[in-house]
Image 1: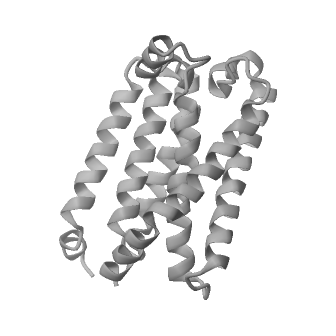
Image 2: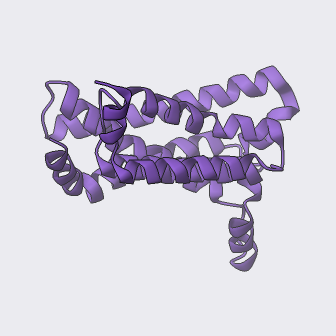
Length: 209
């Protein structure tokens, strides 16, 4: 297939999502609060975008998954620009409702379970012999918890390697149980995603065939 023919097969929605993602990434890179923290926070979004572009000609995900990935990437690049502990809207919520902390990082970890749940569900249904049922849901939740735990290990490794330079990346805000809370929110996100989006995802999978 020639390059022109390949370009013709690209769906307009996917082009729009890509442009939004790239625009947000560029905005995020302009005068971030801390450049090192910005790089650490947006690296997953950049890696994910690269993987999607590379596999696109051979394996296209459902539109639902692409939209979810965009939303997750927006959370990441916004967090990278301001740092998770200093996101202005959540600072306002903290001050207005007299909360104990800026909860934007909790939103990020909720998304860390919510979005990968549908991504892993789609890959398992399309590329493995596993069918719909309790085992599929169990494996999806396990995958999301593994992703969350791996991310916490990466944060620990970066903190050990760079010392105080990684404080903004860790974003513990003085909470000694921050790591456990992060994984708990990822768990909640994955379960909530399966409960609310499972049927809609099945419809999207039928359209992708």
